[in-house]
Length: 440
Length: 167
Image (cartoon, rainbow over all chains, first blue to last red):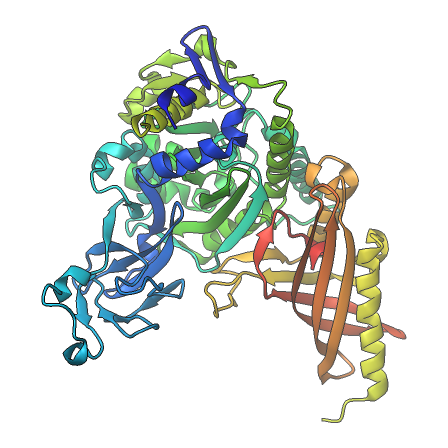
C-alpha cells in the first residue's frame, strides 16, 4: 500500500480531535499491510522464560503468519528460527514445547542443533550435489530473539531496534511485575486458546479500556458484590473467590502512554488484601517499600505492549497475547503467571480469581468477545465511517504526572482517569508510524 | 466386579436427564441435581498430551467447588446483564459410552463420553465440544445426586465461549 492510502485513516489534531476511520478494521488490504509492517517488522511477544527454563528446551509459536522455534542452547542463551527445514521446508519442531539436543527433520532426516547449525545431511556422500554446494549454507534461518524481565520477544526484522529501546517506558511496569518475587515469575501449567470474530486491534484497545468495565462486566461486578454480601451475612453464602472490585475507572486511576505504542491503565483496588499478593502484603512492604508495594499489590495495572500482548495484574495475573487470523478473526492465547515460590494459599486464591474472570470460560471475557463481534459487524456500516478517541482530551497532559514522577517513569503522556480514551492516541500514532514507515 | 445391568441403565438414564435439562435450559431443575458441596471441574491442558490434574497449582478452565458458584453462572444468565448470554445457543448434548467404574451404597463413579453441539444465533455458526465426563454420583432415593462432575474437553480451542451448558 502507498502511504497516501493509509494516512487519511487517522485524524490527529492534538487538543481538538483524534479519529480513526473504521476501514482500518475491515479492509483486507490494510490487514495484509499490518502483517508485513507491524507483525513481521517489529518485536512480537512469544513466550516467557519459564516456558523453556532448561538448556536444550524449545518452544514453538507464530510471529505474524510465520512459524518459529524459540530455543535455549546448552549455555542457556536464547535463539530463534523460522520453523522450516532449509531443505524442503517442512516444519521441524512439531510439538508445542520439548527438550532435545538436536532436531531431526521428520521429512528427509536433516539434523540441526538448538543453535540452528546444520549437523547432518542424510546420505551426503552419495548426494552428487554440484561443486558449489556448501553444507554450512543450510543452517536454520535465524530470527532476532531477546528478553526483558523474563518476557521473550522475537522479530523477523534483522534491522529492528534493540528490545530495550523498543520497550521504552513499559520496562518500569515489567519490573514491577517481575519483582513480586525475588525469584521472578512463572507461567503456571494450563494454557488456553480461544478465537473470536473481530479485528485484532480491538484486543489491543479493550485490554486498556476502563470505560467499558461497568457496562460489559455489569454481571460480574454485581455478582462479586452479591457474593461478598452473602458471605458477610453468612446467609448460607460462601465466597472462596473474593473477587477483586476496583474503584470506578470513570473518576479514578489513570493511564500512561509509554512510547512506541505501549500504553497502560491503572486503578486502585480497595480489597487488595484479598489478592494472592495482598495476602503477603506486609512481607512485600518490608522487602520493596510502601510505595512499590502499593503499585504491585494495591493497584490494578494493565500494560499493553504493542502490538500483541497485555500484561494484566489486577483481577488476577494474566499474560494475554494474540495473533490476527484475518482482518476479522483473531486467535488469543492466555496464561496465568505468578510469583515463583508464593505460599499455597496465595497460589490457590490467584487461580480461583483468574478462572472466575479471565478466559473464554470465565465470567467476563465472553462478554468482551461478544462486543468485538458486534463492533466488527457494526463497522460494516461504513456509511458511518469515523470514530473518535476524544474522551479525556482536556485532562490529557504531555509528560509525567505526580504518580509517574514518584515511580521514576517518564511517559509520553499522562491522564487522570482509567476510563479516558485518549489512551488510544499512543497506540494509533504508532500504528500509523509503522504502517507508513513500511509503505512504498 | 460384576456391575448390575439395571444400575448401569439407571445411571445412564440419569446422565441423559441431566443433558436434557441443559438442552432445555431448565436451570432450576439442573441445579437440583447437585449436592451443596459439589465440584464442577473442567481442567485445562498444559500440552498436547498433558492434562492439568492439580487445581491448586495449575489452571483450570472452570473450577467451581461449591454449588453457589454454579448458581452464580445461572444467575448471570437470568440477570440479562451479560451480552454473551442474551442469545443463548441452541444445544444438543449427546452422552454415550456410559461405564460404571466403581459402585457402592455410598457412591458411584461413572465415566462417559459426550458431544455437546451448539448452534450460535449471534454468529451463524455451529460449534461443538467433545470429550469425557467423570461423575461421582450419590444414591438418593430411587435416583442420584451429583457430588462431582469433571469434564475433560478434547478439542480445547474455544470459539468465543465455554460455560457449564457448553459441555
